[in-house]
Length: 78
Image 1 (cartoon, rainbow, N blue to C red):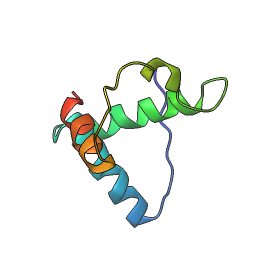
Image 2: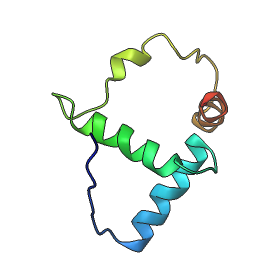
Image 3: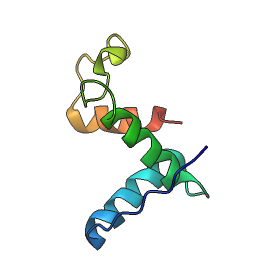
């Protein structure tokens, strides 16, 4: 069963969210819905935060700048 949730947000915020969703999930149908579902799941967790412990040991960072790390991480996103 599904439920429709309607919400009004500022245009600038909506555009930023859409851009990030498409960067992560691709420029195809369903990207925004997928990102929003992920966001709702994280927000609805008992702590209200993402489970960062699942990332422990996933990153190999030694002598890398924050910009290089960001590019590396976004390249690894499905």
